[in-house]
Amino acid sequence: MPESADESTVDQNVQSAEVRPQKRGLRIAMTPAERDEFLAAQRTCRVATTGVDGAPHLSALWFVWDGDVLWLNSIVKSQRGTDVSRDARVSVLIDAGEGFTDLAGVEIRGRAEWVGEVPRTGEPNEELVAPETAFGNKYAGGRFGYDGRHAWLKVVPEKIVSWDFSKNKR
Image (cartoon, rainbow, N blue to C red; front, top):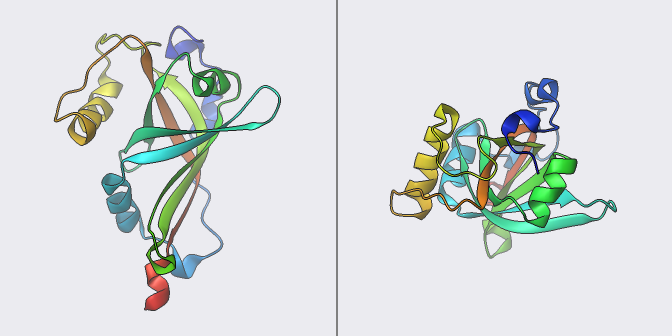
């Protein structure tokens, strides 16, 4: 595991790339405002990483979206943490709906980068103030706590795909 974000293997040039546009399903794609509202309302995402043998690993996780970046608070010594330390590529799915015309979701593909202490113990970090505040508000009654086991993964989208099947009714 990296001991700090500086030791991450993520290529910083890739992180600054523009988000590739969605090409298919544009009629049912969410607008940026709809996407932001949807992501604010959902609580659980599924994070896909690649294992050392090339097999996918999928895990559920809480998240916050700041309008540009997806923030994941991950256990450092998890399979997910091991995978992203070796291969930063991830695909994250956030979806909802029971009936076909209620289905909606967002897939975010990008690279996960450790930010701040790994694991996080509460050392001041300006970049983490907003995600920790948002996470505390969303999941913990306004308080974010440090346990020395979790750290922050920042996923800068390279591609975002969204769908809202209720738009098929219109």
